[in-house]
Image (cartoon, rainbow, N blue to C red; front, side, top):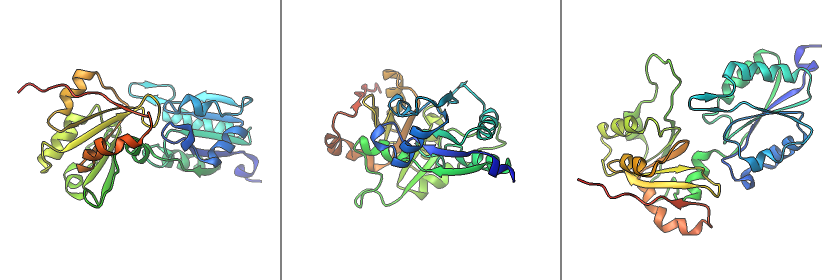
Length: 266
């Protein structure tokens, strides 16, 4: 008998962007039958409430500057738990394979002989703009969209995101985890030819009753962040589709509020 036959199975499960109604049926069934659930910081309390009450729950979340467990510890713990439990759920906000380190964890688990299954979730880059009334594509505004991380791994020899190529390669840009690096990102996109008046939306706590957003332009958004105390984590949407927010947000029932922009002194 090989190691994988003597072990349980690890499910890398996407919890979606926050609204429990967006959780997949497969994810819900796994949470209700799990022996172990190792969950991230951005998983909403209403989804955690669905976990089997007899399951062991472990917080393994990572936030900027505050890591409950480092990545190596998380992988080691998953391997250990899978050796004595049948159903081990690694619960991640959004989708495991979209800036969720799911690929890294899957490779490590397979290398250790652990059986793994992916359960996709709705990624925040799609759902959060939708709840704010911002379509990522529209025949009159945008026929292309790029998803990119605004927070690259520390210690890299050089950044891998080619902001110049992105500026010219897509009409709509969705940036995950980009609030802290937003001045740099805006500067790079502007240097590449994007207008200083390019619309931008920042949305935090997306799809939940606490959802908030700032709507501005490259020129105004940093002053708006300072004036309102807007903080990460947030999704940034860049491009002309942001202008549809005022027209379409009315169709989203009580799920978001916009922080009023502060007048900018010239």
